[in-house]
Amino acid sequence: MKKIVSLIMALTLIVSACVVFSSCDKEITYTAASEFYYSADKGATYGNRTKEYAVGETVYMQVIVKVVSDSKDPEDVKVKLTIPNVTAVDAKYYDGQIITPVYDAVQNVTTYEFTITASKDAVEWNFVFQFVPNAEAEVAMTLEFDDKIDSKYDRQNTVKFVPEGTITDWE
Image 1: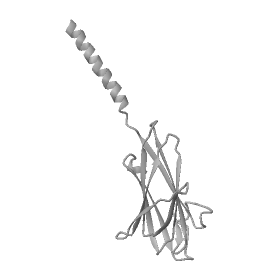
Image 2: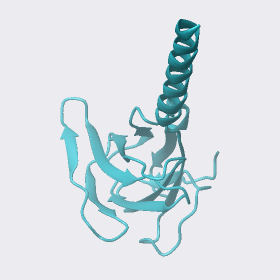
Image 3: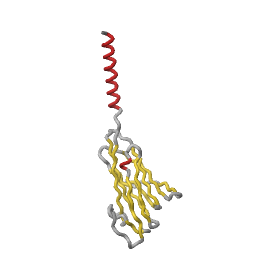
Image 4: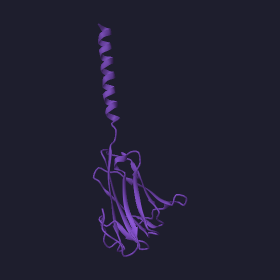
């Protein structure tokens, strides 16, 4: 009888430990949202409808990123923005801090990597980029999040650089 009671107590202890440890090992989930906005008037106004810009004219691009986590203490998230076929002139965090790009001359790609803090209340992170299109092209800019965030939240946004006077609205 003592063996049965001891066995039941041991099993209860094991089950309790499993419940406690499995609840502590809850996986943290992250979701993200992002949007690209552009300005051809030196940043006075931004929009996401016009997708064509004149070669040689300064274009400002604002990328807004939000990362939400269900954790009380979420980890930082790394975000990478890749811009092909454009020589970047300037990129800044919303607070004015410069973002240093990595330029790959062989592939003609400029990459910006930055770190943001996830939160429960969807804090917006704004990044402003200034560049001058150097040739006619259709450029697909890619925003990728690190492995904490599902790749379905990665985003690609395409703009066209066209000769002056040939700009049209397109989606």
